[in-house]
Length: 300
Figure 1 (cartoon, rainbow, N blue to C red):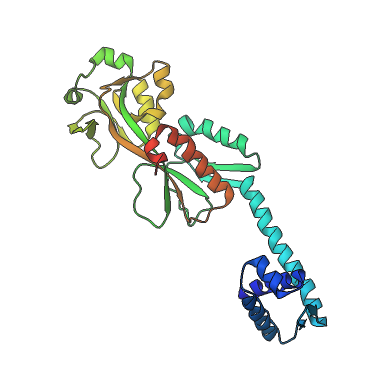
Figure 2: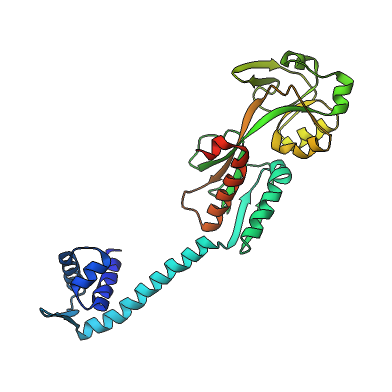
């Protein structure tokens, strides 16, 4: 790499027709330029320049070397320019693992908007519940919901989704509407399968409490929990973004509006911080769009 840098410096010296002008062009001392060119000649074993007090001239070897070096330097500059163009208008195949329910109900319109912004990008999405291996499998990024275990992966938080309690109007008509968190003990609650599936942590302002709940369903699919709630099977704690359409269409109604469940974080997981432009733009786009509803994340 040091040799390549000296080759580029040699090209600058020849183009500037002297050490002083080359030093001014690259922003290093004149003595440094002279020393590095001398070191380059020593490494090659041939004199490249005839030096006089007033100017420099290429030797025969120097002329041959300059022509080769100039092509190499020009190719390197072109490579950087092309990468800059890729950054401005990324292209290629973006391979991403997405959470099934969140992607179908919330990310889909954002993905469509992103696709319109970057017509050079193609998409290969994997919507399965499994946690893909970003090291062994050819994925650029994985979008994951919930607290993530410690790992060597790079996690960028996209959002922190607020969760509220919802039930169908028909269920509430049949069973009555809970007026306080303790009333949940007498209701069917659809629980997300976890270590404490039948204990809900709720908070209202600075007040928080644990509520023991019961019900016939516990599962690990947010989408199925939402669907069962619309089918009058009980009360569920769900991210507001997931149920926007159901609330608007009257299929679900918020209950105990002063109370919330724990927020659900959303992360973009990658194997490395050095990302191709297509992946970086995708993550930045989701951060920008999702943070509209999550100002605390936008400020991080």
